[in-house]
Length: 113
Length: 113
Image (tube, rainbow over all chains, first blue to last red; front, top):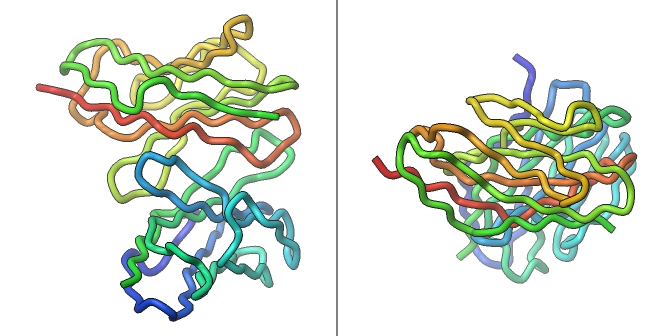
């Protein structure tokens, strides 16, 4: 089955530690995205990538970093510089050049204490 | 610039009643419009999309939406609510050619027995 996988589903970290969230897709999509979701705030774009080895900052990139070394993979690192990292993180992908509908992974809930 | 407004952060209906979730958009060029559904602690799933073809779009689970250019609206409807429809619903807009959508803040649909 084609789709997007995110792991782990739940992640707990101590304040001051960096943590990497995994996102893998086997849909052969060019574009990938990371969103942060907080209650009542909808989805906010962190980073996006249209092709391998290229990515752009979204609206709330401060305190986050990404890499895109393979088409299928787009990991997100939440660094200790992120002031309020506890949130639900969603990875998505899309085909570019058509209707740009997005396919989402199941999400990772990160709790930092 | 593109933007989306979803009227009402919560909508409550009785089972069997009409569901109406409102979405208004702003776009300087012909838009692509989407509705997504999110069940608790899950990713988003595409319900339906408008990409400049028929203005009345039918989606999954009995939902449909009508694109009204004069009103800049794309409201989501379902004739008869089911308990399983209880979820968060997001409207999104992509200006033609953009693969970066803008999401509304979401509307939580509550279905009473």
